[in-house]
Length: 330
Figure 1 (cartoon, rainbow, N blue to C red):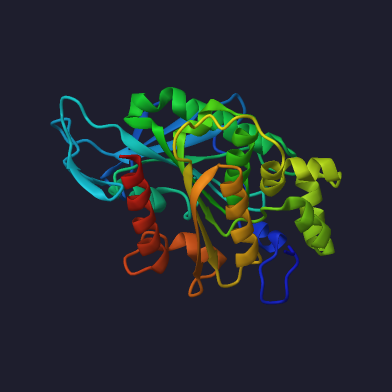
Figure 2: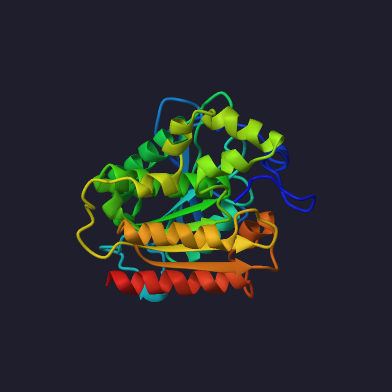
């Protein structure tokens, strides 16, 4: 796979240049209501001391009686219990932006995406992480690990089920989500047992060392700014390479996670590389089920921006995937 592109393909530099670069100010824990979507409650919390180490938690807003009514939870409809509400599965979302841009409240990952998942019965969490070039690998991975740990420790406070986490990433966020899962597996981290599904939308890279070797000069400069050019360092940031190495005992102790990779029409990562990653996950016993879907009618940006809209191919596929994953857990 090459990170370089023919003229009609996206480059990481062009993608990063089109995104707004800002970091959210840490806020004291508290609720705020989205006036544009009164059904949503949003909480912003800091999971670390730096400005970028924040996350947003979205859930269904309770009514005046303290209940949320009837909600669809990962494919099944259940009535909320006012005295003992059922904990909700958690969608843990990692934004893209060439590792150097993007934000948890971007259109692709903020309120619009939250509404889709909250309506399906999820607690939706969108995270920020420290950005390159000021912050190089492995700081992004460390932030994801700390954010996940924070969510697992505090999820019950906001109605989340720490035993049912769905990990979602787009573009560079897809690479980081895959890297997080592979790293947890590599080190036998107990947090891995909470992750039930891995959803990668146009992941920027899965074999980073090979991607760097085949990159054009512009994209190689972008990768070097984040990961450097030392082969060992590149391999440490490569989900595929981590899965190839001997790992600690898989701590899950039951069927591993489900894996979905969706690829748009203009993205550089090809189906054969995605299939290779799924095979590596299965051999390593990280995943027991994997699927690659091609969404030819969408490009890299619209793949995520239109997720959740009725009639969208990816919406239908994801709804089915989430239901199957939920059914497997019961």
